[in-house]
Image (cartoon, rainbow, N blue to C red; front, side, top):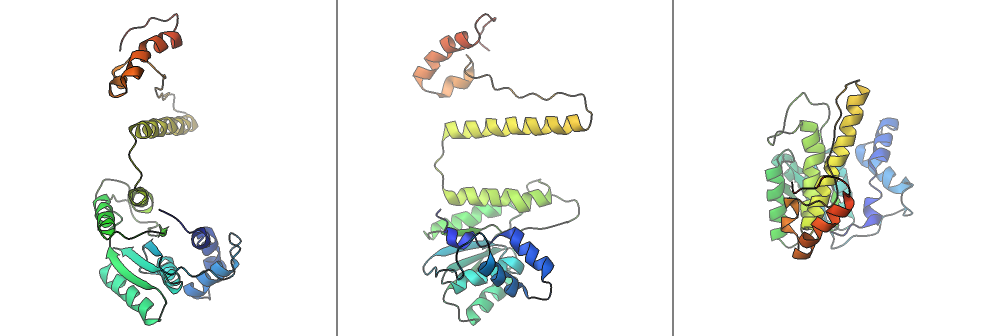
Length: 249
């Protein structure tokens, strides 16, 4: 997925939030336009046309998401408004088209609290063989009562982060690497361990948390690797653990 920086750098959430707080009498559209014009992250006073490009905006039926979709369409983009309110989605598309914008908009249903729905959305998008130039992960919620998504995640975490993490990675179409997948999973475990230990220490808990990452050892973990690596694991392990009792785990 290629991201056009001249477009995406201007949609800075922190700047949008500051304008909303400090200029309450302006409409949301006026505030967003001010962000686009005065954002210190961009050297553009007026954003260039984006004719023929495709954008996806989650939560684009209202609020900041709608104004973002509206502006992208005005630049000539085809904007896919992804949301879970069909009537609101149809109204948003109709409003954008009634303004006589150079681009186009359409609504596609996706429930960002459901990882199954996110996967279905990506399959539909891929089936159309469209390019993707801009992805705006905007959908979110705030301060809802204690509840879980259908996948069992805390609601804020599931909607605001996990679903967008999945959406982004599915759209990137990164080729699977078993080595990369293993490395990422172990890194996640190590970082989780560090974070958990800090929390336990701060709460004066006497529990010590450990993560195992010993390097090359003679275990069955290497059974899925190349023959050469399997042959090397025992002599290398003996060098690393010289002087220690060594046996196959």
